[in-house]
Image 1 (tube, helix red, strand yellow):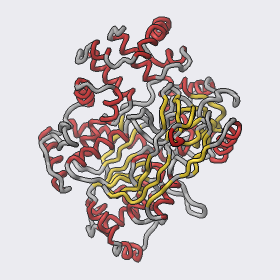
Image 2 (spheres, one colour):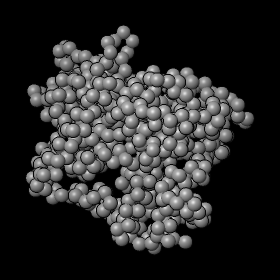
Image 3 (spheres, rainbow, N blue to C red):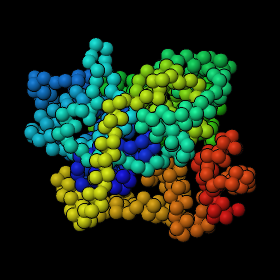
Image 4 (cartoon, rainbow, N blue to C red):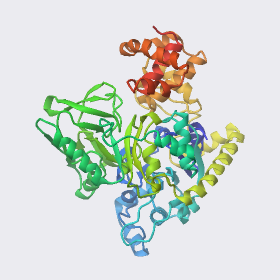
Length: 562
C-alpha cells in the first residue's frame, strides 16, 4: 500500500494499523494525517510506547496520557479513582483520535488497560470509547519488555483491545531509506526468517577489525559498552572539557520522565574533537536526529560548533523537549541537541537513519535487535560489522507467522478502497470530520497559516513537491514543508524531470557551487562503472559524497547542468 492510500484510509476515520519496513514512511504518513486533522481544528492525541519515541514525535507516552503510569493492569477501584481526576477525564473526553507510535514495544496487558480507561472515562461502552485509534509501528523491531518477576509480555496484536479495534492494516510498500538492492535483499531475507547463504555472505563481506573505521558511530546491544567507549574517547582528547547542564520547567514527575527519555544527557560533557550526534531535527539549520559530526570549537556563549560528516558547519542551538497535552505544554527540558556518538545503543538508535555505522552484535540478546541495527544504515557500503551472534539475525516466530496475515489484509484493504467511488470516500471523510467537531471541506483543508494556500489532499505526492518547487523553494525548503528527507524530494524531482514537468534550468538553480565542482569527478565514476546506480559510485569514491549529493549530481547530469 502506498502512503497516499494509507492516508486516504486514515481520513475516513477507520481504526488503522500503519506498518511497513524501516524507511517505508510510517512517521511521514502520520505527520501528514496530523496536519490534515489540525487543519480542521481537530487535535489528535499523539502518544508513543516509550519515552524516547515520545520525544521524537513531540508527544507523551501512552502511559502518561492515559493516566495508568507504570501499571499494566487496572482494577475497578483504579478506574473509579481515575474517574475523579478532572484533568485526565477532560483529556480523554475531548480526544477523538488516538495515535500510538512504536506499538511493537507496547504489551497486550497495557494496551487493554489504555482501552479500558478510554471506554470508562468517555462513559461509552463501545471499544475505545468510540475514538479512532491508530497503531503505528513494525513488530519485526524491538518487542515489549517484561520487568523482573513478571510473566513474559505478549504482543499487543494478541490483546482483546486490538481485536475490538479491528484495525484496517495499511502495510506501506515504498522505501525511502535504503535504495541498495543487495542490502534490501539481505534485510528482507532476515525479516522473512530466511537466513540463506547470501545473507551471511553479504554480512561477512562487511566485517572489519575492531580497530578499523574508528571515525564512525558504533552500535552496541548494551549500555555498558556504549558508556565505556564514549568515556574512553572523550578522556583521550586534549584540551578543556565543557559541561552543559540541562534546564527544566514543570512538575518533577513529568520532568524526570522527560530526562530519562531524552537522547541528550542531563550533563553534556564535550571537548574540541568530540564526536557527536544531533538528537533533534532542525531542517532550517541543516541537521536531523542522527546527523553525525565533530566539535570544532565553542562559539558565543560556549555553544558547540559542529562540522558534520558532509562538511556543513553548524552552531548548535539550545532546544526544548516537551510533554504536551494537545496545545498545552506540561513539562519542558532545555539542552543542546547533542550527545557523544562514538557509540550508541541499538535501542536508542531506533528511528534514526545513518549514512554509516560500525555495528557490534556479538551480545545481541533480543529478537529484532540485529534487524533494527542493520536497517539504520542506507546501504551495505555504509555497514561495518564487527561481530554478530546467532540471536542477532533472529526475528520473533510469532511475528513471522502474523506478518503474512498483515500483508494479506493490507492488500484486501487497498483493493477495497480502489473500488470505492470517490464520492463515497469523500462523504466518509466529511462525516468523520464532522463527528470529530471539525469543519468539513470539499477535498481541501483550511489555510495552515497566514498567506499559505490550502492543501488539496487529492493530489499525488509528486504534485505537492512540484507546486512547492515551482514556487521557488529549494530542496531543503520543500523537504521541511512536506516533512520529507532531501533524498525523497530529489527522487521526486528526478521523476518530474523525466516527465518533462521541470526543465534543466529549473534543476540548475538548485545545484550549489560545491556540487558543480564535483560533477566531473562523479560523472567519470558513473561512466567508468557503466551504471546509473548510486551505491557502486558511493563505494568507488569511498563515501566522499553523500547519497543526496550523488543523487543531485545524477539529476544535474541528466539535465545537462554545467
